[in-house]
Image (tube, rainbow, N blue to C red; front, top):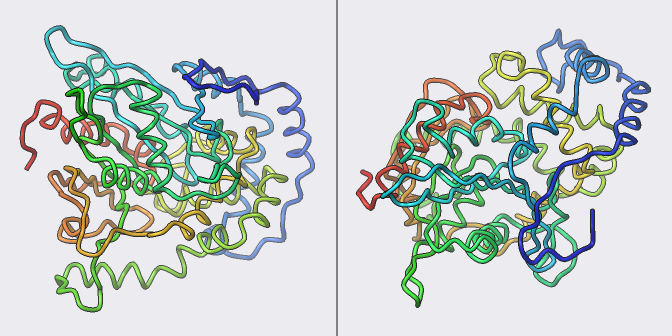
Length: 416
């Protein structure tokens, strides 16, 4: 990547050299399947060896990176530097309607093990609703950044200027600077996310709520839309008067924690060691990532019910070809070093918030009363299906819910 300083956004095209694809093909040809545990294809011990073998075969003989590269480059891509932090983002201006307010900027934030690939299929519907049977008044200026250390963004840069893990709260500050200082928006913006994107978006709404600047324009986050809870309430759980629903939900989440979050402890405590394996073995990387798409989606145990092999590999390829599989895990270390890690006691996110509860998420969605402890909840939708990767699994439902939540906010109406 160039060492030029990008004080203002510079157009960028993804252009992976042929030698990188040849190297990948050689590694795939030489991969060594592990000795398999007899789990009968249940994924009980991790990625099913049979599924992985089929995936690698498709990777070698049926997958076309150029198709994915063209899908990314279909949209306006940019690089920009905020201090020493290099950021990549897509920005698609929304359709404008004569006599109506200009489209609201909307920052979509992915998480791990996702990437901007998650959003490629919904950018057009959000920016140009009229092309999809919607109302052009619902249009957004869509901004989709790659998190620091992910994809085409540079490695995370700490506050002292050194390279190293940073937390989601720091990334929220980068997003705010991107919107108002680098893209020069002089109007409020919305934020949306799941996984780390939910945490980042929540901090953006907490730290940068809407406010009036000295010259009269309004800055900050007008609305927050989530498809996963991003923060915990600032309460002492031992003393709080919890509802029966909250108690049942907490018991379920805590009972599943060891089984579902072991990967977090590895990525938080030994990201450098894990990073060697993920950066050196494409099949190892695919196994590490694809398991999460199987376990966290509404796929009934078979990821191909929700994702094509091409989609799974598109996401893996963004990590592999950019060499960011290791630096992406740093975020789990960064959040442990973030102080404070959670909301202050007795406080919540007062920015109007919408929540889309997809039933098959990594953790079951919390009850509404728990959400209201954390957020100024104005909009709550219980989805009939879908899981952690909402933009890939249920794109139409997610888009409609985002539009419905922001519609009254952009026109200054209540959203109860």
